[in-house]
Image (tube, rainbow over all chains, first blue to last red; front, side, top):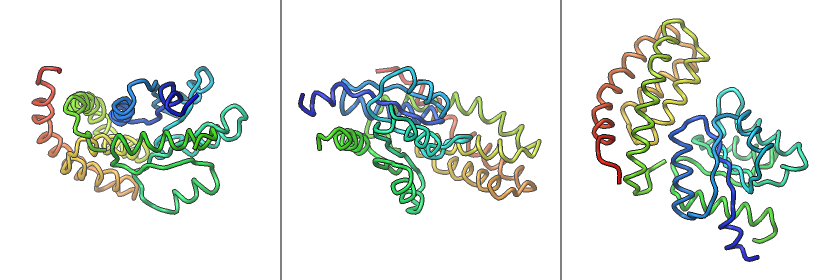
Length: 137
Length: 105
């Protein structure tokens, strides 16, 4: 199967406590690839529920979610055999390099996107992370 | 995040933002009055994120300032921070209402 076929079948979980941001990310991804399936979670517990009951190729998550941050979700995923290879894209409005380096070095983030971003930026990161994790890059 | 040249998305986001303002502002008033710092910090952070999405710069700045006050636990300044936010949101609302009144594509 070619990477293009994989792209069409991609299923992405978008996690953000702000509905406006979730809607924008969903629209951005669908703009570039209308075949992509996007589900949303507004909190880390809801994301965990979705992961446990659905099948996702990539997780795109805000890093600064109140109560449980994106790092909590990522650590939960990386500690489980069925999710530890699912690409995780970190969305941050914080350009603090220390946060980003820590996320890469210690937590297993696959890519990050800093707000504001454009649809193609987000989609390219999703595809690149997916292909790298699946040996397609 | 910018709207990526998508006017329909701008209308949808304006609609969501109005809904969020209706839900969040009464809570923010309540948290300011009760000096509920953590709740104020979380709620203003969330609203700040949405305001940034529509490039509502003055309202975003007011919300960010209130969020900064909560982060610094400057409780005596919360009412002034809220006044500024209320003022800027009142200026923003007519633009949002105008956007959502346009017929959907």
